[in-house]
Amino acid sequence: MGNCQCAPEHSELAAEPKKSKDYLFTTSRNLSLPKAVVAAGGLAEWNQQHIELDALASHFHSLCKATTKEEALKEVTGFMALGHNVTAYVYMRMLYNKNMEVYYATLLAQPSKLLPVVYTPTVGEACQKFGKMPLYRRGCYVSISDRGNLKQVLQEYAAEELSQGPDGRPLCDCIVFSDGGRILGLGDLAAWGMGIPIGKLDLYTVCAGVNPYRTIPVIIDAGCTDVNGNTDKVVVRDSPFYTGLKQDRVKEKSAAGTLVNSAYYGKNNMIEEFMQAAVDVFGKQCLLQFEDFNSNDAFPLLATYRDKFLTYNDDIQGTAAVAVAALLGAIKVKDPTCKDLIGALKKETFLFHGAGSANLGALALLANEAGVPKSQLFVTNSKGIIWKSEDGTTGSYRNDEQKEFAQVGEPAYDSKDLVTVINNTRATCIIGAVGRDPGCFTRSVVEAMVETNKPSRPVIFALSNPKTQAEITSENAYCWSQGAAIYGSGTAMEAVQVQDKLRTPGQVNNVYIFPGMSMGAICCKAKTIPERLFMVAAEAVANCLSAEDLAAERVVPNPDRIREVGTSVATAVVLECQRLGIACETLGNTHQEVEDAVKAKMWSPGKAQETFALSKAMGA
Image 1 (cartoon, one colour):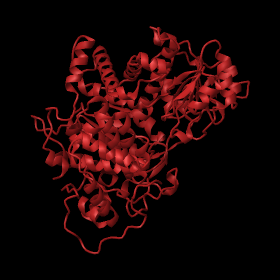
Image 2: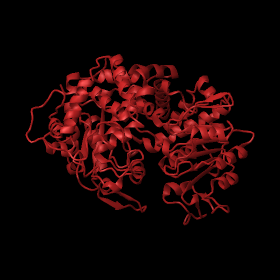
Image 3: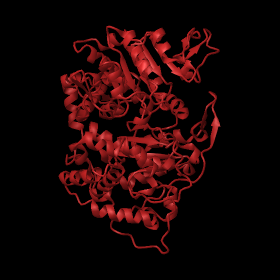
Image 4: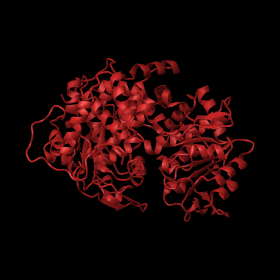
């Protein structure tokens, strides 16, 4: 997959131990490293024993010479010119480990160019090859084999990687944690999924100013399924480069009939022990963000812990919020003079194609926070429009989350045919997040949306990732609708010239939501993160649309303004927390006062803040 010279499947181990080299970062940590790495003798030993990793570390250490952002931009641009960003990803990881301040200065200099390198779409392939790249000290691994001792795992990591506050407590504002069970659309990559929490926290910093010295990326290592557990049948668990526990996940059937990780439920379960340990070590204001858990675990875990800890699940709530933000943006594209976006939203009829966590989360936000009547909310699964009997005992739903938005009564029409569904529901907005039916928004579907909505304009979103899975391309959406469609996509799509006007589709990505959401919660020391905050975040994103954005028909702001958007979202979150009485710290009484306070708290390279010696962070 591509040009990155990652290691092959079979590693030849060095015959004799070698002395540590200057490009191999060391650490005295033991509990918080991946178990296979500990068994190898530690971080430097792991890299050194695999001759391929040793060679890669040596090469990229030599190639990464930058000491300024200008030099780093020149170097990384050279790697990107090869046309395959995994090589650039490896370079950026080396840059981080050599000079963290220059790393973030480089990202901030050209975020729209470099964020796709350090996060999506590149991070998916990077995770598939994570063990075949040199391993660095960043990242805490919490293993199922250490249950009952998870507090000590976090304490060990904090003692070596974090600074302390005046009270002696380690300073950590937020943790992004994943079990690697559902990395993007790639399936179970387990410990190799560490690229996701690392990348997520980079976006926290670049997009909203979260202090990177006070964050921890965490992998919950509860085992890993075999090659059948991931989409591309990548050898993960049985690879000689696999860093985590070489054992299968232990699963059980839940009360809802879904397969879940046994260790995450019941008395003294692993997730609660981890979350409580984080509070004990770092304090109750430490934000704990769920990331890339399998949906069967994601929904019940969020429901169980959302009121007990300062936590949220970005895959469910952040993705939902940016979809709603884009829908609000579409209303502004239709009518730039609209002053009541929520009122206009309530007049729309929504057809969600696909009943995964993203669409179900958006449905919940529209119904519960925006006040859209459920009679105007339709959602499909493989059986067509989801329905239930009047008493709720039968229907086409597969779980309680789908049942909540099931229409009452079985449709009298063929609800598996999208054109028929559009004609019967009179949908004004169609949102695709199927994930496995590329091109399902056919020309007939687009033409039905146009005809149904005359003289108004239909909204057509294709949110599935990657691009190869998109329900429709920007070119087809614009051309088949003869420019009538207002289009948004989950992955970056090409601008299209239609009727002498250049349409630039907005990428409906939750990067517009989660950095500001987290920064706002951190700034005001929020007690909880209720669903209401995601609605105000969505409105804040829509209100960031400029005249230039609207002229180009972007439904979300230009990504070059992502830090501005992050600031606006954080400010809106703080104001709402103060209004709801869940802010432990008041930042101001007016919007301007709060915005100024948020900006003052935002980290940037070289800014004098509570940090710790770079030599400690970089392992020198």
